[in-house]
Image 1 (cartoon, rainbow, N blue to C red):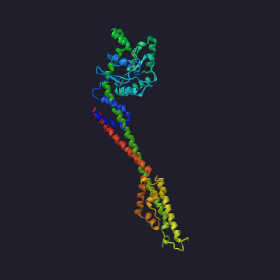
Image 2 (cartoon, rainbow, N blue to C red):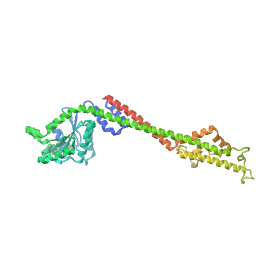
Image 3 (cartoon, protein in one colour):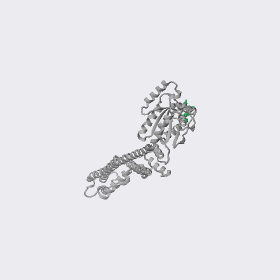
Image 4 (cartoon, rainbow, N blue to C red):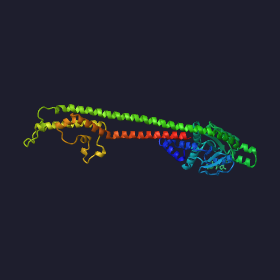
Length: 419
Ligand SMILES: Nc1nc2c(ncn2[C@@H]2O[C@H](COP(=O)(O)OP(=O)(O)OP(=O)(O)O)[C@@H](O)[C@H]2O)c(=O)[nH]1
Ligand SMILES: [Mg+2]
């Protein structure tokens, strides 16, 4: 797989598990052919990280100074090992330096050399926390951390030195710290004093590193499998959760519609019952008898009948409208609204504005065709209501998410097959 494909695959995975960015960067490094075992120094600034690396390599490669010196990552390949010098960690410095250090520790390193100057006494809270994190990381990634106490030559009092060493051992019981002095080592080499070289602790550290380096290939295999497993698990869980949610929402969606439809049938049945006595008349429909000039202002039978029909129709509308409101249909969708606010109701949209006579009411509520139309059109507005549309939108999102999850699963599989 070339790097461009790799990016595409990684993006597909990150789309669903964005928290795995560091893991994927690490995976990329593990997959890259010919990556040397990488040793990264970590520690607070001015504790002697760069100088220690120089001593281990045997050349003054990395710059050393009595101030905050290393600001970027510096890499040097020596005897098929990549040595990485990183900026010192500190809570109070610009975050960008820490980004380099973070990248070195979590993406690049196979082995972490955690450097602490014994001059500073015990580990502080930041060092302690990071070391614990690294020890914990070993459980899953098998990446080793060596704790190195530097500048022991700066502690002339052996008792004080031993005391600090003990406290640190107590602080971080899972790691055996190695104590070293870069200056003693340098002097021993320059003056050909093997005793000084040995007392510097650098040789013991080199041996420990050699062993750690020999473990890197198996550790990497383990780490790769672990990373794939973890990500697969996370994606699978995501899928299970989304499918569960989808199912629940679909049930809700169905149930709501069923309740709406069944409730409407009941309302329409009740309207029929209510209308029966009003529509069921024998003989002439007095409501159709127009008022004459003479009876214009009189309370005629025709007027009474028309009022009765109107009231019955209004009741029917109120019944239908309260059903609509109960189910969240509170108005017309935006694209159907008019300039006349009082006409912007679903009832008007479905039943029209005309004055209803007995014949109309009969057609509206007692013929199958009209009844079905009412059911169909009210259901249409029901589906257009805000709550229903939000539900659909939510379901669409889940569908998209499930699609992305499927793609991420394929991408992860491709990645796994490629290595
Ligand atoms: N006496 C003594 N001094 C040391 C030892 N190791 C490092 N130093 C001195 O400590 C100072 C800091 O060393 P560096 O190696 O630059 O420290 P660093 O941790 O890389 O510092 P940053 O790059 O700023 O994070 C320098 O003056 C070194 O010479 C040691 O073992 N003994
Ligand atoms: Mg440095």
